[in-house]
Amino acid sequence: MTENDISYLIRGAAFEVYNELGPGLLESIYEKALYYLLLEEGLTVECQKPLSVNFRGVDLGRGLRLDMLIESKVIIEVKSVEILAPVHFKQLLTYKKLSKVKLGLLINFNESPLKIKRIVNGL
Image 1 (tube, rainbow, N blue to C red):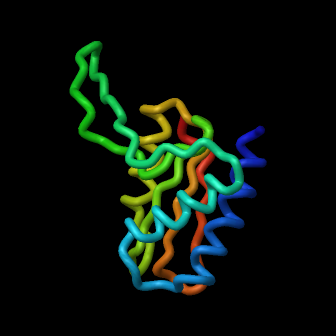
Image 2 (tube, rainbow, N blue to C red):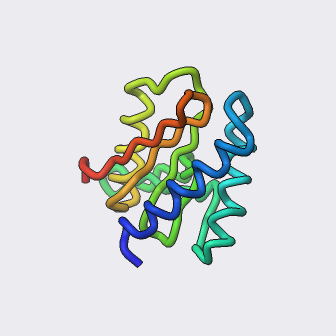
C-alpha cells in the first residue's frame, strides 16, 4: 500500500471521527477514535511511538513521540487547537526528518471545518 493509499484511508477516518464527535475534545480522544477506525481498515497503527534523536553520533534519547505512525509510512500529528500555528508544521517536519518518513498529516479536530494538512517536503 502506498503513502497515498494510506493517506486516503486516514482522511476518510478523520472525517468520520470529526462528524461523529465534533470539535472541542482533547487530542487524546480523537487519537483513540482514529486509532480504532484505522485498525478496522486493516492498517498497522502505532500510537505514541518513541522517536530517538541522534546528534553527531550521540544518542540524545527518546524524548519525542509520534502521535501515530501508520504502516511505518505515514505520521499523523493530532491537534485540537483553535488554529494551527507555524510551530505545528515545523514539529511535523522535524518528526519526518528524524524518522525518515516521507509523508505526514497534521490534523486539527478543533477547527470548523476539519483541517488536514499534508506535509510531503522537508526530508
